[in-house]
Structure formats: structure tokens, C-alpha cells
Image (cartoon, rainbow, N blue to C red; front, side):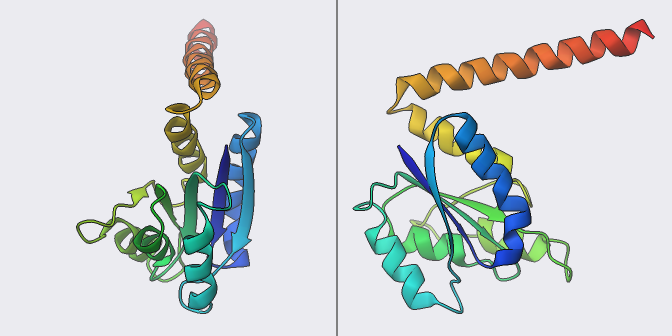
Amino acid sequence: MKVAIVMGSKSDYDVVYKAEEILADFGVEYETRIISAHRTPDIAAEFAKGAEDDGIEVIICAAGKAAHLAGVMAGISPLPVIGIPMKTSDLGGMDSLLSTVQMPKGVPVATVAVGGAENAALLAVQILSVKYPELREAFKAHKEKMRKDIIETDKELNEE
């Protein structure tokens, strides 16, 4: 099982590394690349065309501003694509969000919150868990741990 994490520029890594951590925690192999839909479109197309043959099963794309990276990947590759709209200095990420979520019919991109790298990785794990039962069990355990953490925090808050 392998996930590709593609970001439009090095500055996106401040958010993207959180997806790497989640995937590593679940034992999912990943590769991280910097590929721009606008500055290196030939490389983006080549990557999307070859991703399936390279053993990749889900592609996560992080991009800001015009944020066409996820759409380019989804337009070329048959693999599931998850978009992470990145926060921008101009419009706070609204530009990225709209560019990622407003895909034409027939070119789906699952889109998480602005800067939502953790949820992108968790969604990738859920998608992979359809094929890999061990991931489904690990994801169930993750959800149970979150539930227990909330209950414990609530208890601590109310004991004070």
C-alpha cells in the first residue's frame, strides 16, 4: 500500500509533514514530491500517468492560490485524489479551497479543510482500508482512542 503526497511548492511542507506522520503511524508507505501544476506541468502529467504503475493507490495533493494540482492529477490518473487547499496570504485559503473543490463533473477530487493534512491522510487510510483489512482495524482503534481521549479530558475538566 502506497500513497503519493504531492505539493505545489516547498513552503507547503510545513503542513504536509503532518500527513506523512499519520501515514507512518498507520504503517502506510508514502512518497512525497514537489510538483507544480503551473511551473512543471509536464512533470505533473508524467507523474499522474505513471502513478498507478508505480504502485501508488491514493494521491494526496497540497496546493495554494489557483490550486490546480489535485485537479490535474484527477484529470489524468484513475486513482483517488485528495486535495488539501493551502492557506494563502492573499485570501486566507478561500482561493485554494474553491480551486480544489470546484471540479467539473467526471473529475472528482475529495477535498479536506484548508490545511487539513491530517484528515487527508486519514481519508487515504480509510480508502486503502477497503482493500487492506488491517488498516480498517487500525482505523477503528484510532477512532476508539480519540473517543477515550475526549472522555478522559472531559472527566479531568469536570473534576477541577
